[in-house]
Amino acid sequence: MSTSLIQSRNSLFIRQYLDYCEYEKRLAKRSIAIYLHDLTQLVDFCEQQKCTIEKVSTQQIRSCLGQLRLKDQKASTLNLALSSWRGFFQWLTRYHALEVNPCLGIKTLKQAQRLPKVISIEQVAQLAESPITQDPPFLEFRDQAIVEMLYGSGLRVAELCSLDTHQHPKASAWIDMQQALVVVKGKGNKERIVPIGSICQKAIETWLKHRSAIKNCDSFALFIGNRGSRLTPQSIWQRLKRRAEKSDIGQSIHPHM
Figure 1: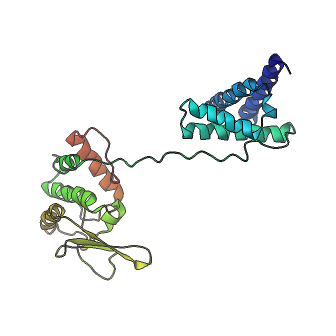
Figure 2 (figure 1 turned 90 degrees about the vertical axis):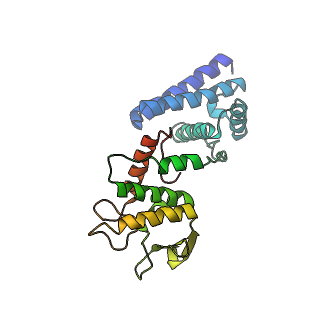
Figure 3 (figure 1 turned 120 degrees about the horizontal axis):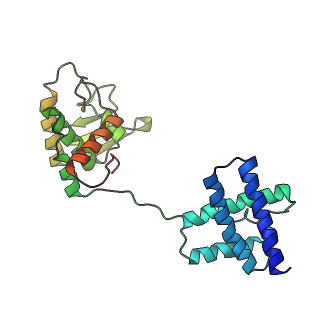
């Protein structure tokens, strides 16, 4: 088959498939644009191989991916392209009697795992020492203790919210100031013991002194709001965000950092 006939046949299939996506599947224009881009890359490869797109083999699909990989395309980008191709060949098997989808035997590429974002010791100190000036002083001591506890213990924010000031029958997590440690109960009532450092311990001690002066508060919760109720993960996230804005750290902060 001549090159012009191959190009004409490939263009016909792509146009029909995109029409199907737009009018039958009612996909968004952005999705159709992505499909066009991905299929164009495959068509270009097929024309190099002098074959129509419906005749491409599994080995040729792998070769196409290899070529794109050599052009420094990311694994995530190639996996999206492979997904687009799978959908196209599935349409060919359904409406144009293609016997086998050549993409079915191809596994997605392994993607590099993203490292979690962290903040430095200096940024933690800056976060703890940057007050929100409109708030009562006792909230500043509480927030400092929260920052030190999150950084020094590695507790999840939900575990931090569940911390009680002492052990009692219904406690799921509590702090032991004498032994400088935190106990968290997980699944099956398994206990995880987490030590806390001296800086964190001092911050908690200071907060407890101010907490004791708050009337009508939750009798167990270690960290409470200005109305005396236990803090929620959402409220801690909001406080950290506000402190980060005041401290000029220069990046968005969330509890997992």
